[in-house]
Image 1 (cartoon, rainbow, N blue to C red):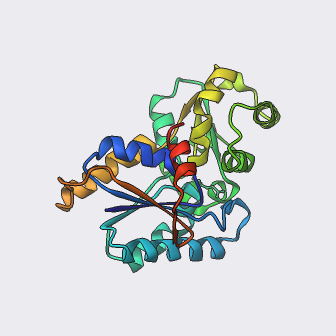
Image 2: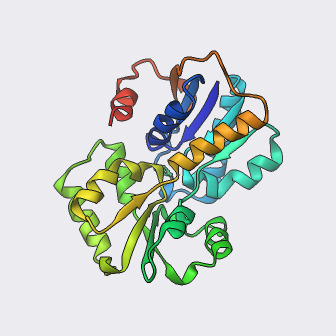
Image 3: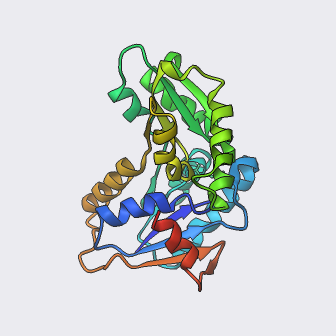
Length: 249
Ligand code: DGL
């Protein structure tokens, strides 16, 4: 079984991709419902929340854990990998995908939570690609709250995005990086309402990376059935309808 962690329902967008890539694995999805959104928490708080979830998932016999939360990755991944010796795969904003496919003279709009955008790890990623001069950062914590409240194709979301995007001249951009798993729910909405922007996220890359890691370590399952169970802040979910609804989006 593989543990998949997010602060809330955002990581289900990645879970969907994981099931597609690894149909013979079983998954245990952990949403930290009591503490979402992480956008307004301190780094110390987030580190503690993520470590608690990792310990829980490991106790439930997960052979590998996926941080399906960019915010969690940016705050905790180095610490966790140093402390624990099981595989921890972590999503991060897909700025490399945007850069590799970018058109000359276009800028990249990197959207994520404020925690991710101000993290050293994110800064190091941008610097390692030497693209600081073409990347603009836009925190969109409001999208996390809309998604948690199941507000999707809605006028309120459009107004919010219009206000946030008005800080930039969108003609200068091709790629918008959805650097928070909650944002993926708005991929089609963004395409429809801001057709000059091409959204990219880290879901496919992370799923591929998980598959490669399991293969390399000889941990790939051949007998799972893509079974899924859900946990909210340490408690198994009995009524899974909310999770299944999000997975269906
Ligand atoms: N889904 C999370 C991410 O990918 C964070 C959302 C939040 O709790 O603010 O960054």
